[in-house]
Image (cartoon, rainbow, N blue to C red):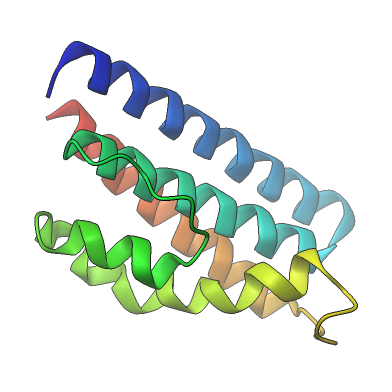
Length: 131
């Protein structure tokens, strides 16, 4: 990985941690579960894109975690352990962002799953970047 790629990957993961920290704080303060779920989706998306950059791939302009995540699994089996949880976050993107598209109630359990998955993903990416 070139220095430029490494720097850009770190910028993406830093943004991912920011989204995650806002999700944690927001959930604790307001219990606005839909915002927590959306921000966790964003954090994981940015973390996946950091890994794509590590692999020399320009991240596609997509928000579909299943599609994005599948692109890193071939090269990084370390992430297989959270594949199913990451894919579950896809259901949070549109309903959390656009309330008139789908009427969805987000629960504390949804928020808990989203926070746990995002934290696992971000830690795995950090581990990969530091090795």
